Length: 521
Image 1: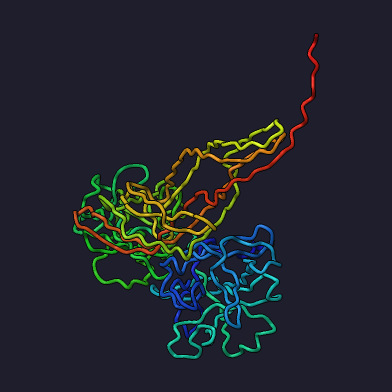
Image 2: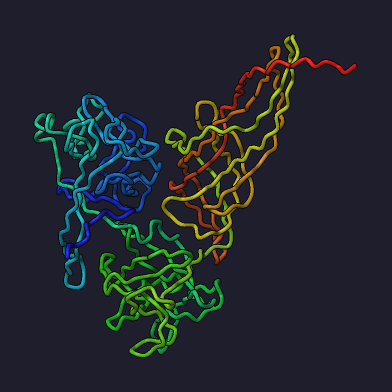
């Protein structure tokens, strides 16, 4: 039986296999300058919207994919800069036509290898590696996507020792020899982030999906355990801190009240460990899987999911134990944020990275006027229509778990020429990821000249599009202990839908001549 083809996960980070880059991550360059929108190997970890990418399979070409940057949701596409072709995250929409210059199709060349993980004797694990070939025909067959530093005239730093990292370039057989020695095609290690595409918040509480009991650090027989026994979210031993590892896929979890990290014991119980533990040790690393409105937490060391257990074997009743091979009912955990109130402020939209898509021309209103006389008339027509707009604020890196927040901020709208600008304001309470819709009724007048024996139909047309705009913001939380925590984030994404470019269109239609009728005498 043939094995299934290995495919890229739907959400990934790419870590360089080059020894010179010390395991750095491929990062979207969002800073202004000559290298804006290029892809550079200088990311420090996978916990950034600039180092995460979403993979979409081609609808027409088997084995080919489209890759988009998590920050601006734009697709990888080759663009000419200087005397070379570079991969930039610049395409608003995917392009399946291999002959078009803006084709976004990429062929991943995937391999599987093994590496040794740290801790517990150094266990071997399988890892996915990948190289890329651009599939479009514009640059020739087999155009490889490799890493190199731009020359000074291309806006790079040439061979300068201050260069921070190579950029992704497209080379084919014709130009490959010209860059011999400057080309590096060692590929990437693929980090699979598809189990939980967004990180958990910094401070959370856990409870079982079946009841309202929160997971708390408790002392039983002078030993610390984790137990679903608290009915009070404000219990100081209920709050946990999520510490993201550099790979973006695993976390350490610290019980705040006891200042102790979760630790997998030899009999599979999860207990708070007081004292120093190496962060890369798989005993204290866990993976979080998001499933609908709940989560499952899996131990990296034994590969099993955590659940409430009956006790025995060195544990306690309703204690946390990593024993389930699948996400059972008992392994379903509800996660809530450990806050009392949240305020969002200081929003800064990155309008230059706006993405406009889903564009359609709509007929907003139609009316007509007829002139069955022999002289031209001018008529004033009234048109009635409804205009619906939508605005959504969401995050691309950290899930907010549906907590209501207050915010006062302007927000982008598309105007003439599909250009986004800040032209409206929102103030009030909102949920991250939920759409705020408004519908307004309008009445307009239009004066039209109607020739003799003619019917004129007037249509009010408009263009309707969606727009994605990344944004940075400040977040102020009042915590369960009454303290205030402020933090800056760069993972905001605004999505708006509105109509623009309103204009009238008229169509003339000749009326049939009126027949003469004789009156009966």
